[in-house]
Image (cartoon, rainbow, N blue to C red; front, side, top):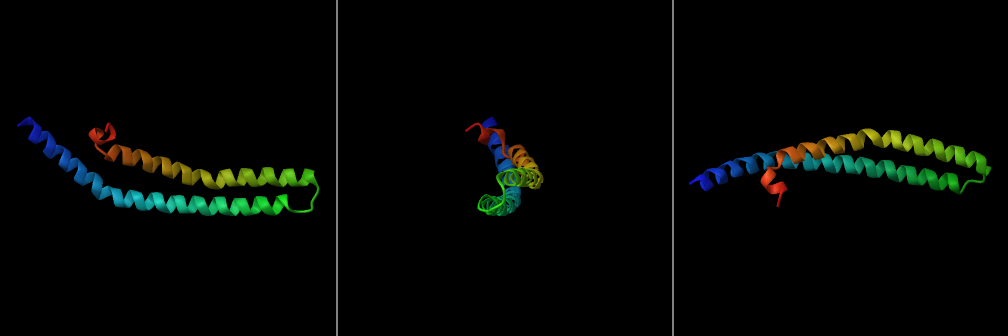
Amino acid sequence: MAYNGERGALGTELSSARGCLPNVLSAFQALLAALEDIDGSYDGDLETVRNSGVPEALKQEVLRTLRQRHEECRAPYVRRLTALHKRMAATVPQSLQDS
């Protein structure tokens, strides 16, 4: 009989997890799309600088600045993804995480 009680509790946890899952997945997708846009823009900027005819010293300075701005721009999105991951892990029943 205890098994049925545990199964009922698991079912309740799963229903709760499923209810949150679409929202979390949508947020993940939106954040990943934003990061893809940021990375694509960065890659384009890198290519432009690398192919430019400016002196190498100036190129390296611009590349450092681009890299720093890229990291700063990505940081809030990465933090949000980490928070969503933790939220999702907390929502999924431990019994499912172990399997």
